[in-house]
Amino acid sequence: MECAKISVPLDYAKPSGKKIRLALSRVPHTAAHSQGPLLVNPGGPGGSGLGLAGFVARSLPKKVAAQYDIVGFDPRGVGSSEPALDCKPGYFKPIRPDSVPHSKAEESKNIQRAASFAKACGTKYGSLLKHIHTRDAVRDMDRIRAALGAARINYFGYSYGTYLGAVYAKLFPQRVRRLVLDSIVDPNGVWYEDNISQDYAFDARHRAFASWVAKNNTTYHLGTHGKDVLKKWYAMREKMRTNPAKGKVGPAELEDSFIPGGYYNGYWPALAAGFSAYVRHGDQQALVDLYDNFGATDDTNGYSIYTSVQCRDAAWPRDWKTWHKDTEKVYAKAPFMAWNNAWYNAPCAFWPTTSLKPTNVSNNRIPAALLFQATDDAATPYSGGVAVHKLLKKSRLVVEEGGGNHGITLSGNACLDKWLAKYLDTGALPASRPGPDATCKALPDPKPSATRKATGEGVDLHTLVSHRN
Image (cartoon, rainbow, N blue to C red; front, side, top):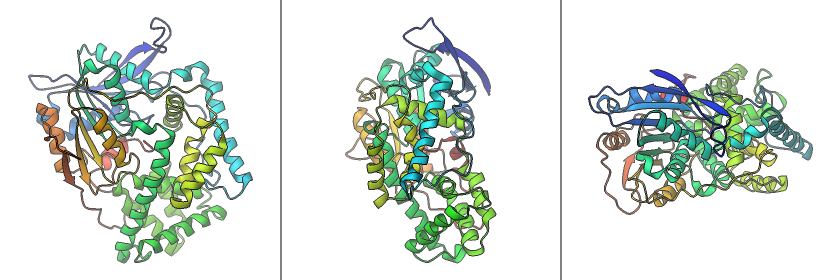
């Protein structure tokens, strides 16, 4: 793998002004004929793309990968790019206040915490923040294209990376050759409404996890019905309020540990094993291990970019009463992640920049794009794939029927990967038809195991594809 950095304008209205640097990685083509650069992005916002280039190069069929210069990049402010934002180191240090407020005082504590993060970002980075948003990240991508000497790019994005790709195609349609979007952001809801949609979808996925645990009661012994398993989970959560596991895992940290299970069911055996060890044997270390392995993933650089991009990209309510009302409404029906997600995004209520208007990504000026979407995806619900399929004329939508993972290609589903490989190899697409243009059966749920490690062919991808979006 090759590594490099390029300089781009901080402010595209002043292209000769201050510069920032972007970190790039590249796996060069080895075939006699190159199809040009394939830029890849894992999502976030805030995810580093440097490692994704190597993963994609290893995971595509050799014949296909050999035809591309596969290029990863850290978007502005991320990882090895300069400067890398880190608004408030230690912001996620345990133990945080309970995400579910049991009093006005508890809610006020979380409000003050979120406001302090926004204030820290403004104090530390000032006017830089107004240049951390999707459209400028997209302009950076076009500078990468130019630096590579390519007239057009191919692009493959997961999660938030799908929005990045759709916005690039809107701003630079003449520069798009092939476009692959996997697990698709609904551009009609960026970002406040999309997060509310996530709350319902993650709750459904958590219930699916509980049903799977119940189905495997001979391994986990937590009940034979999903509702019984959920009762034990929420009882465990309540215990964390007064007796945090090893003084490290309170209710918020427990939620953080189980939210990744909504992204990838390969985490379910490990989560269930730790859950069972605590409920049946009082093993607090089991919950600490889950938190260390799955929950403590929100490095403050990634989160600083997540908030900077989302808070700047689109308008958010500035009156906390709106957040409270909407979150209480969601919590009544979908309690698993409602308040946790509200606090994760709450700095946007206090963000020190104004907000932009979201980009209308409707597009009839690019070649046919290939879209992938699972029906039960929690992070980017199915409606997003349907919406973008309509907005990108000539696009084709391949649906994983009954699948709930987020990031579904290059994760062991041969049917999905066949369509991906054919498209990148020759541009071939499924025939257009009403609804999804092609469907693939989801992989079976994982087998139960007493192990506390992640399992399945999707593990490598899901260490790279960013949580939250």
